[in-house]
Amino acid sequence: MNPMAILLPVAQAAPASPGMGTFLLPIALIAVMYFLMIRPQMKRQKEHKAMLEKISKGDEVLTNGGIAGVVTDIGDNFITVEVADNVRIRVQKGAIGNVLPKGTLKSAA
Image (cartoon, rainbow, N blue to C red):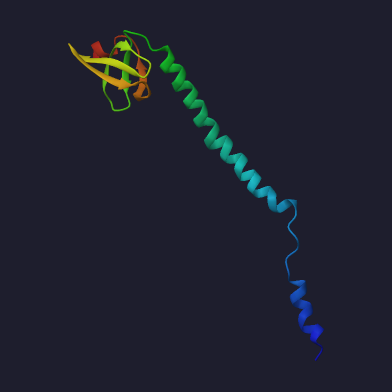
């Protein structure tokens, strides 16, 4: 028996060297992740930051924890929210989830 006859099928079954097609799939997956996950999150962060910059005294806000109140004081990092008559709490600016339309809290009471 010829030893080359045994080794020849094994050599032919060896994989070819990686080409451009091998790297195309990871690049496509990264592009899909960017457009479906990263870009929308960056857009939401930018909108939230713009909302926080527009907050002024007298605005009705809703925190991420579900506390609703009226803004009475604004600092660099904290906002004072009046949740009831003479009941004020200080929350971080980032904890403000939404600015409610004027009159929302009075209509809910």
